[in-house]
Image 1: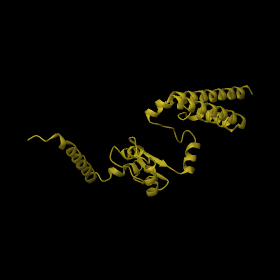
Image 2: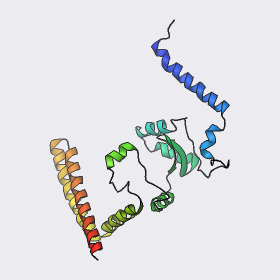
Image 3: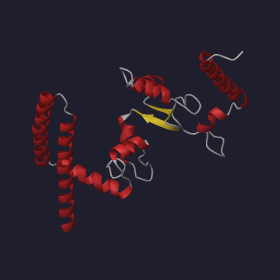
Image 4: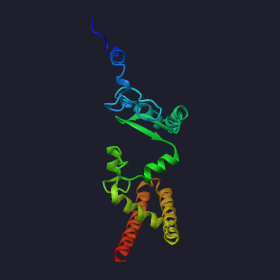
Length: 210
């Protein structure tokens, strides 16, 4: 008698569970490999946390929380259990998640050789290869310095915010009248990004001239 189609999900789930149990019994050290240093056998100084399911890690829990009414619940729950910095396994790779401002600041201000920015491919395609978020090394420090100098100028900040307020007001009016709004706010953001890029270019030219 052939099994019905409805029994296949249960059979697959049972097979996966059996595979996990067998792996745990036959290879008890396999689950701790990511927590040891290769060739030394000593425990690496990793934060507390959980690597979740084999292969999948904690990615399903992260996605489930992201689509729930409280997307921050994934981080909040683990922060309570393990602290402000905890280990996890997301998008196919082990990861250390930080909710501590001091740790995040140290990472962002560290030398480019210590930490290299990495984003999922979909996000890279959205931001573009020349985005300020994915730059590294000396170019990253140079661009960040130009952007920081631009935003520290009270005159430029006042002008940009005034322009943004005007354009956002127009976008809201257009959105209210048309019932759409997406093309309008994208146009507004694009114009402001053009102004920011032009101001950075002028600042760099003036610095080189000196």
